[in-house]
Amino acid sequence: MGVIVVGVDGSEGAAIALDFAIREAALRGSTLRLVSAWEIPASVLASVVAGKEFYEEFRETAIRVAEEAAAIVVERAPAVEHEEIVVEGHAGKVLVENALDAELLVVGRRGHGTIREMLLGSISRHVVANAKVPLVIVTAPQEK
Image (cartoon, rainbow, N blue to C red; front, side, top):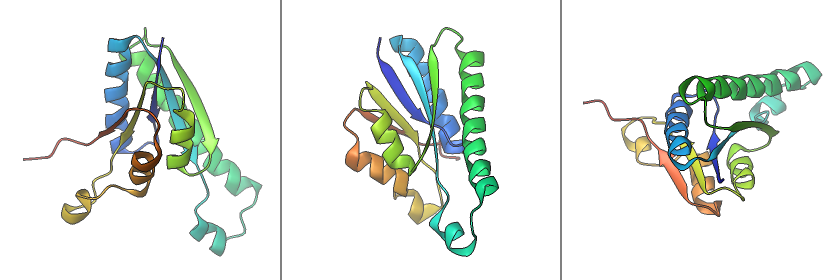
């Protein structure tokens, strides 16, 4: 049985990617690997002395996001096996590393406006440039 990796971060784009990945895992009989990456932004580190509580808050948020994604998998496709991975690091790098043994990597794309919608975000760009497995970037349907 293969593995499908999907990035989850609580955003609308990630929710759409998760929905796609759930359907794909059900069709293929694959295990779904839910990857939630987190890091304290450099801008925050530069302005704040990050104590243990601050660090734990970021980590706990990533854990909660992964758990919520797992609950969605159980609700929508109870037969799909899944695993949750929560890792500190840049999301693009973490996704690529956790997809090395996967048959498919799925990520969402955040829309930011007319011109910026044509460009991929930094995570998507990193994944496109570095993924070693087939990749799907899921976008939200355009409103008419």
